[in-house]
Image 1 (cartoon, rainbow, N blue to C red):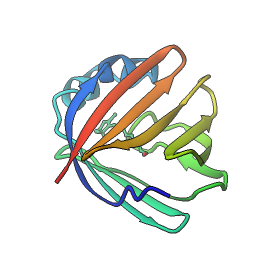
Image 2 (image 1 turned 135 degrees about the vertical axis):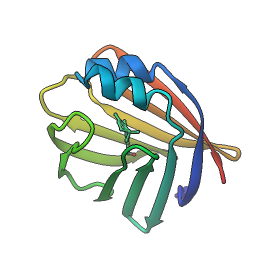
Image 3 (image 1 turned 180 degrees about the horizontal axis):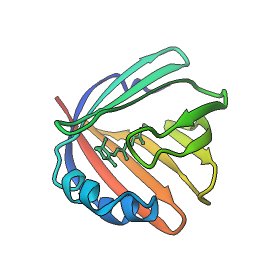
Length: 133
Ligand code: RET
């Protein structure tokens, strides 16, 4: 499978504000977060994955096993409890986050030297592109 390991720096972030809004993230946090540069540090080892979202304001980290559902608490984001499952769909990593919000999840894939992410919740899609550092 594809190896997502590496350090990736945010290049574009479309609709992040609406994504945060649909998650009920408060105005002050949104105003700060939308301006931030984000760095993803991904460590992929066989079917284990650690994804760190780093910024000067706050960090968010998850570790998981691909194909195994786990309890995710989005601490520092919207602080919800989710049942999260990440699996492969071809070369794309697909995540479903079951919880209070419908149609919540994300997709990650690589095109050239760029990491593409779609974060979705209800009818909102945020598209992020990262460039390899
Ligand atoms: C930041 C800054 C503080 C406020 C918010 C943030 C949003 C982080 C998000 C992370 C998503 C991570 C994913 C990881 C899995 O691959 C930048 C930490 C709201 C939305 C999808």
